[in-house]
Length: 88
Image (cartoon, rainbow, N blue to C red; front, top):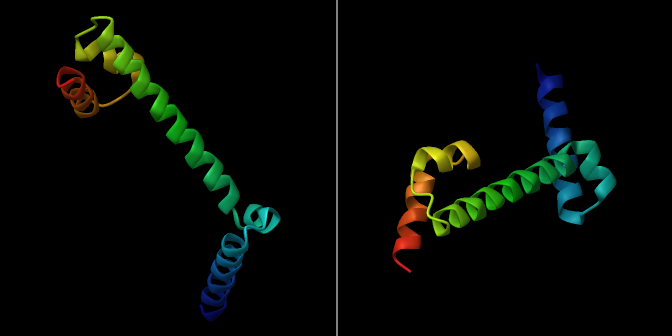
């Protein structure tokens, strides 16, 4: 049990050191680099979906179901975008 805890502490310390000193190789070894890449991809996809929803509203597509189908955004996210669009 103690070995597992020590290993986790070591892994955490490696990841922290790599993050603090921006050592790409260490970040990759700790799995942190890939997590950052994945997060960036997710954020980019979300941003594109929001842009698409805004364009659809500008073109007169007013049914939330159609926008959900094309963008995969949630109903709440689309309603928020719709409110922002209507308040301009």
